[in-house]
Image (cartoon, rainbow, N blue to C red; front, side):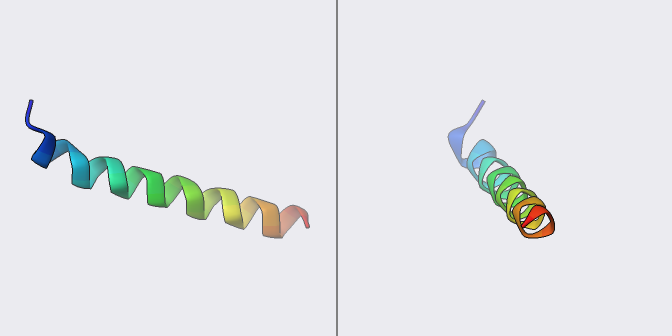
Length: 29
């Protein structure tokens, strides 16, 4: 396992999670 291969995927997943969280907060708010 190479960090260089995992890092972009981790960043993408984190970004998607943050976006989904923000959308949920906006929808509830």
